[in-house]
Length: 499
Ligand code: AMP
Ligand code: MG
Image (cartoon, rainbow, N blue to C red; front, side, top):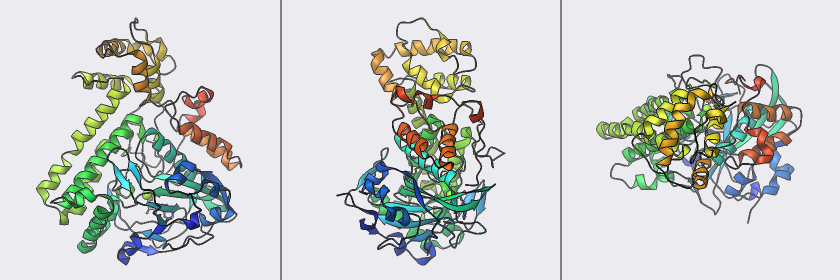
């Protein structure tokens, strides 16, 4: 039976770790809270009654004005490599782990590698100052909470591992960024908020017993198979390598730029965490930088695979007191081939190749060399829907999608030749391709339209967009406009780190 938030069963496993792992702290409420967004799909994962969205108690509870029963809210400590430099003391400066929901249902959470989450962290972002706030205000603004909310829904629907978002609460509390903005809170859900940076914190402080305790906690909670292995910590690291490779392969294939790939934003379970100045590609550009505060392009779209490697090196160093060096390095060496293999597989799917051929890699490379300037999402969707079979090649179907359709003619000819080797029914090919070539992604300009309306008090556009993004692979002819490349005003929106 679905139940209200205050009737959920909660576990407090993190609070049972030593005190050095967190600060016990309550949220600081916002003024005049109202529900700005809600995901019934996320609610179902914890058996939460969707009609909660209508109850004032729910809103008051997720803006910190009402206590939660039988939980020990806490802010987790961590450190991290930020833009290549080590920051020894970070932690939840504006988020509080309110409780770990552990309903009867246990969900297979990560579709790639079969992680079964037995609990969901309910994590309140924008909840006020904690011991880890440094000079900051502990708050989040409505704009960034709605962006994270929409991204969580969109990524899940695309099949990319991600934290989830249950709800956003808006308020009348002003929060100062470049200008005053309404403060908000986002209730995030994830099986764990342990980050690469959590391990780094204990390693660099030379607190090896706590480091071991964190690794044991992680193994016990999430990696029962690895916990049974002969060398459990090496097995844990190997699994994190595999998950991270898989994750970043998906980011690259779907055109997602995270924006702030610091190790404190990297989940030990390999899902997308801490949405800030992220972006989906409109025009394909390996040098695309989604974060206004990253002028050097360290975290540019095309650099994400190597940053993933750097972050794993950081994690390996943090785990080094628990590992034998040769086995750890062997595990790390699996990252590149795993990522390349997963990426190649996804791209082959996007091109409709049901079987793998030796020339596929070359064909994909040639395409990537042609793609800069093309609308990434529209290009693949058009390619899916074009009836190739038995036709003379004509690049005009790319009009409006790529800068110069004629430049694609030789590649399209090679592609058609390659497709003919598949000998599959065109309808089947299209169906196969449309399962990996979304029609709808969370383009920045679409998010901005929803945010602008929400700031004027109209939450309808955000909810409509959310519903479109829940079915990214469906045609949805009535929602055609959400599939369009950005209009001029939406092409170069600056997304800053200040959220
Ligand atoms: P982020 O860039 O959001 O991943 O945050 C990096 C670190 O800064 C984390 O430790 C955050 O908790 C902290 N932080 C970011 N914004 C704020 C804020 N407004 N108040 C307090 N801490 C913050
Ligand atoms: Mg962060």
